[in-house]
Image (cartoon, rainbow, N blue to C red; front, side, top):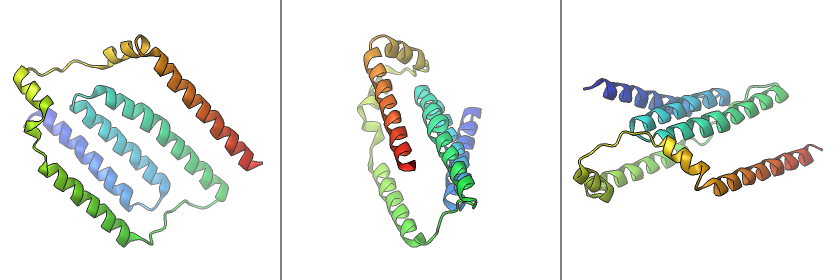
Length: 174
């Protein structure tokens, strides 16, 4: 077993353990911090899979944006109400049943797929090469040259959504 495989299994273990701890903690703030660890572990697994752009996007969008916003909201809610934010556990049976059913369905589907017959895997075997170069530079150049208009339109659309959310929140506070 190589050092890369050992590191991969360490990150996979950290990801699975932190995801399981999210299920069993009752404090929402601790769950949010554990979700950060889970997302960072998933980003590390993306790096090992050669999807470096997805890894950076995972860190920037989920860890840097969404989770920081969630933690900020939980801390503000906790400060306003003066009591700890805890989850209620009244539907354990149904949650476990649905979760185990989905796990079984996904496991069955994965086991039925013949991965060696997929076209892109056959093409990689026929080429007999492993491409290990980074795709981030090429994607960055494409985003700032050929796809600059859609990129800017997406930014404007997100800005409009942010202004609309702030306007709705202000109106509800008044």
